[in-house]
Structures are given as structure tokens and as C-alpha cells.
Image (cartoon, rainbow, N blue to C red; front, top):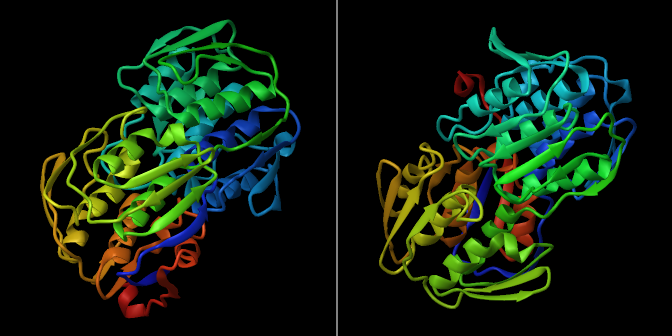
Amino acid sequence: MSKLIIRGGKPLFGNVRVGGRKNSALAVIPATLMGDGPSILENIPDIADVNIYLNILRDMGVKVDRLDSNTLSINPDSMHTEVVPEDRAKKIRASYYLLGALLAKKGRVEVALPGGCDIGLRPIDQHIKGLKALGAKVEVEHGAIVASADKLIGTNIYLDVVSVGATANIILAAVFAEGTTVIENAAKEPHIVDLANYLNAMGARVVGAGTDVIKIKGVEELHGATHAIIPDEIEAATFMMAAAATRGDVTIENIIPKHLDPITAKLREAGVEIEENGDKLRVIGKRRPSAVNVKTIPYPGFPTDAQQPMTAFLSISQGTSIVSETVWEGRFKHVDELQRMGTKIKVEGRTAIIEGVGELTGAPVRATDLRAGAALLIAGLIAKGETELSGVEHIERGYENVAAKFKDLGGDITKETVVETEEVAK
């Protein structure tokens, strides 16, 4: 267990490089199991969720090698089971991608119901609907999903709600299905496009990724491929908001500006200066931000994963902001912690009403999930005095070397190991 000690009130300056997109990596890694021979994955973030996934693969007999801190070689040829280790699978949400990948490759898969951040009800009914439509038998037994099929047949599938996970899982399963599969009302997120690009490099035939209609023409086999994961726009957004909130001047490198359009638009509306230059953004916060209203919606709208950091940014704005969360109903759990630091935020259902204050003050706070941790980190950088942020393990699920990166920008952050006594542990 670790905690961050943040002494706030210092503007951030300098350059920071964004790592690979967490959500892309967690979809592409299971897809490597569908190929014959090794794949090389580049720009893989060295984060807790990725490392859990790699250990899942190793437990299943897959050969996984780190060529360097951000490059992997994954060879599934020695995989000896279709049963996913329960203890590890329950730790991450993205373990459900093994459903589509292994069902397609092996004809059977057993994986525990997924874990991940507690941000509200996240059903997998659309995943199951899609797999059944392709001809699979899917049952939930003793807390695990068991799917099997002698043969998968392409079909038309309309998703009742836009679901990134279901879209990816159906794509994975449909790659080896006989005939053509059409997914309507599909998710359009960049990491769906990234997954499709990787699969196509392996020999799949996926078209339409990035639109709401995706077509997959089944193939008989895939081979290994080399693929670079796209940059993580949520990590980039976190640095953008931190730079603006601390009234700093930070250039964020290794980004795809188009993926950041909804965040850039809202920050500019709040009075932040942003300059685009190829794969870089320079963010300059010269004054206290103006209040803005934000509503989360699926891509290409304002991303739900950026909502919590945005809430922290708006806590010091001039005026009253309204943040509406339409994706996950449990995504305001960080507000109680922010209020310890002097924010004035009122939550009504899926809406937060934020009355901006002139300054925040440091306090002991705890991250309850990944993006809540990012929000509290930003608040700590803003705040006057010292903030002790625990629950760092949540942040490390999705941010690589986050304390070091902020320290390189001038943030006064130290990471400390917490040794729990037996009494505390109880």
C-alpha cells in the first residue's frame, strides 16, 4: 500500500509524454491469443491492470516477454487452458474480453464475472446477447461465465445501448464466425478502432470501426502481428486539467489531438489557452477558470473517464458549473473527499452542482477508484498546504509513473509506502 504526499499551490511547467491507452491495451492483449505465433505490442503502458492481465495469460500457459518497459512479445501457442484464473480475473473489468477471444479461438471459455472500479452497475447483458446471437451457449455458473459453441455463425446484432465492452467482445468473437457479422449501434471509441486495426494486421476483415455500424467477415485463421497502442487521451486530459488548474504552462506530447477535442473545447470555454502542434498540445492557465457546464456522453462526446478530474478542475472556477454524468451512476464518490479540501459541490442524482471557491486546502483524502484518484491528485496540486492521498493503488491501475511525471513538471509530490499494522488491517 502506498500514499502520495502532495504540497500544492505550485504551477506546473515543462513537457510530459503520455503513455499508451489503457483501454486499448486491455482489449488488444486478449486479442493476441487468437493468432498463431507471437505478436509484438508497442507503447503498452506499464500499469497495474496491464500487469494483472499479463499474469492471467502466464497462468494459462501463454509465453509473455517484456522486450522493454513498454514493449511486449506475446506467444499463445503454448496456452493450455480455456479456464481463466478466477482470482486474477476478478481484479479487472477487462477480463471479460477473454470471452470473445477464447470462444472464437477455442470454442469454449470460462471466466469469472469481472471486477474493476466501483462506479455503478455495469451489466454485461449486451456481451451475452451478442455471443448468443452468434450461436454460443452462455451460462453463469458459480460466479463465472461459461460460453461454448461448436461453430459461430455471422449475424446482424443491434446493441440496445452503446457499449464499448460489448462492441469489442462481439468483434473478437465474430472474427472466426462463418459469414458476415454486422454490429449496429456500435461504440465508436478510438480504442475500438485500435482493436480493429490490430486484428486486421493479424489477417482479420473488420470494416467500419469508428462508426456505429461495424462489419466483420469471418476468416479461418490469424497470425501474429506488430502493433503500437494509441496514446491515452484520459492521461493527456488529466495533465491538461492539472496544468490549467495550477496556472502552469505544460506541453503534452505523444497525443492524438482529435481524440481530445471535447476536453480541449471545454477547457477553452473555461478560459484556458491551448495550442496544437502536431502530436503535441501546449496548455497555459493564466487565470482562475470560468465556470462551464459538462455532460458526459459516449465518444465523440465528453468522456465519462474525464469527468472526475474535470470536477476537481471546476471546483476553483468563477461561478457555478453543472456536471451531468449520463454513463455511470456511481461516478461522484470522489465528491465527499473533495469536500474535505474545501470544495462546494452538491450532488443530486447524476448531477453535480459546483460552486467555485477561491482556493482549496490540503487534507487527508482517499481514492475510491481510478479516476477519483486522478481528481484528488489534481485537487492536491491546487490546494494550499499538504494533502495526503491514500488509495494510490487505484491510480496506478491506469497511470504509469504518475507521481514521477508530475514531479518532473515541478509538482511537490513524494510517494510513501504504508505499512499496515495488524490492528489497522482488521
